[in-house]
Length: 87
Image 1 (cartoon, rainbow, N blue to C red):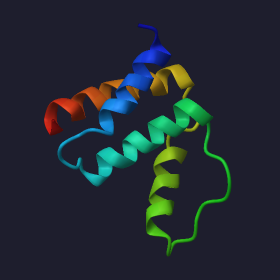
Image 2 (cartoon, rainbow, N blue to C red):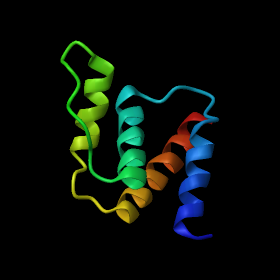
Image 3 (cartoon, rainbow, N blue to C red):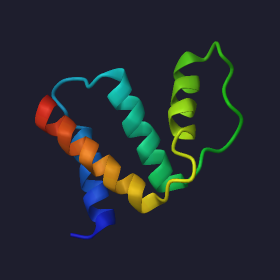
Image 4 (tube, one colour):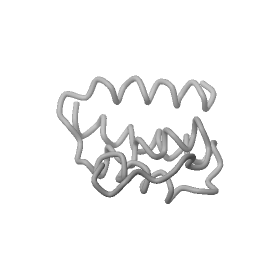
């Protein structure tokens, strides 16, 4: 299975977790997914009163410069860890 197929499989498996991961794990998944599929963070940082959007933006921003292959590999590793913990 190639990297893109493994990435897509990991993304699908994360959707079926039986319990909710921590907010930090969810934010890391979000940021890695966005970095892998869209590259570096785009747009303006959300206002400080939109806590959820600001947190997502901040986590994604931390990955600036990471190539999509690295982001996919890290996403897959985190997804596998979460599937083993929350399934």
